[in-house]
Length: 389
Image (cartoon, rainbow, N blue to C red; front, side, top):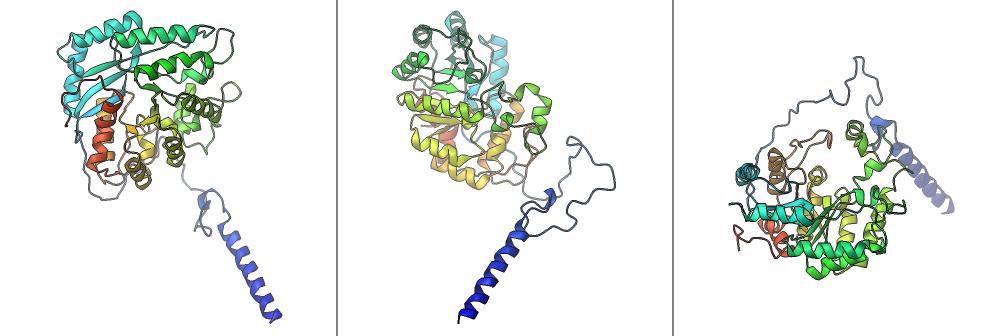
């Protein structure tokens, strides 16, 4: 009996050893395979194309359902427009918005003081007064004693003048902004507490862009999936020790969110966690005052349709529509991704993503909240005309 057991154990060990060998990476072309792939790591006998030259034409034949116009009216909480906007610019903008079913734009470029007053007046005196609203803005330069209180007082004046929120607080806050003494201004600096407390008291949301995609903080090598973008835009590289790490900034941001639980924060770009929705889910669970918006992360949502669908259904009360860069021809990619079950279609910028997108086929109730319902909830003072009840 002992001899039989010995044979069984020896067989299990041998089997596990064989499995380990089979699953070991066999070079870059076989990484993740259970056994070496045929022809793994062979070299081509013709010149290889560059990353920008290789654009294979797909032979896949699947149903295609482009969506030029959103199914429901949309509030874009993250738009960048002139402040103040001229009558001619506003006319052109609204003609584009109508074709896309964009009902309301939040000018997240923001303004403060006299510029805000002029920007709000330009909207209110226009025939399109119900199609745009303004956020206030804060310049976090040379922060020192008393800065937070002065900024909070200005924020209160800006809201009284017509601002419906604060932001977009740009990525420079945390990355490059310096205090008066030359030290880096951290996101959770206690000097700024009066600002966040005032936003809570005034019941306005704070749109905050923290850091950038985590790959931008990693080495520029061929394992970095944002290699092309970083190579094209050197200012999107954040090497240490010149810049704080991605996780350092995320830690400061999360401490800020938790320190001010009565303040409503909208994490721009889904907090740069659209590639890790489990992490974002934990944030939402731990921080009920935090929301997200989908600007500039469609490439991550569209490559994980099942996970993204389930996430947006579960957290349907916590995510808002935002686009960031205003390019009318790019909005239909969002509509198609959110509204259809289409497979394997192009993303609109190759340097963001070299992969294809898949539709999430979100239910109508989720679409309504994503497109306008959650924004109306967070900004009770914005125009209500044109939205289904």
